[in-house]
View 1 (tube, rainbow, N blue to C red):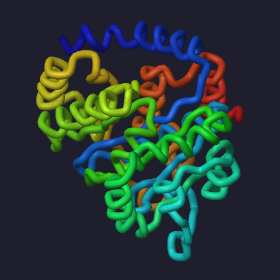
View 2 (cartoon, rainbow, N blue to C red):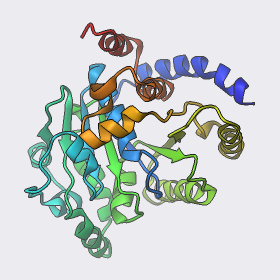
View 3 (cartoon, one colour):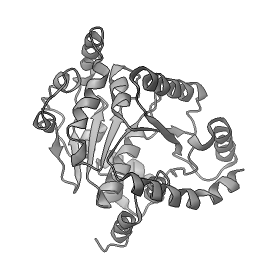
View 4 (tube, rainbow, N blue to C red):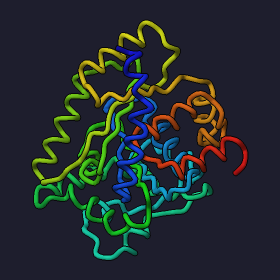
Length: 299
């Protein structure tokens, strides 16, 4: 089964290329897993960087109070003064009101809404406001005001389920979930799928669960193949047949707060993430040629 799935990857990539070109629209994608240590932030950061290098304009939103994504893009987390309540609990009327939250980074085509420890208390403010109105939809409404300025908006979420995560799901067009070999949890994944369905039904939305992929894979071991086939059997085509190999460059780039492709663009994990971006249909052939030039040192 494993080999059969892997042989179909290239056909699926081309199909997704074509579908993305037909859509020709910006997308908001959230990275969510209720377990920590599954390379969620690394995945959001690396995929954002791949898309940006390819020529897409990317906004990354850091909703994790640990602020790793914010630090990775060179933002000083000690003096952040962001009125998140204004962004999440108030419906804005002007594009400029939302743009005030956005900063440029030193990386081409990447902008950011930074995180801070204040996100920990924001959860309770959202909860209080939700008793009176559908405040969960305000982030979605506010991002709609600036969505046309970006090809992709990537949201890095906290590993803890909260009202903040609910806001992110409501704002998203698609949800992607990284999992680790040592984080086997059908229950958590099924709970996330139920949450997405409940939100779609409650608010008449069409949020897509884009899939699950494995991270920190140390070779094609028997355990890996068994886990791969178990997830594929359980989740069907929602389990993505592209896994991210474990390599020292990932740990070193995280420690150095340097995005992976800037740290080591030729490492195995970087190649795997590019393949994943292709498989998800996030990049067309024109933009793929740009990332190929970068990898060859022509850009």
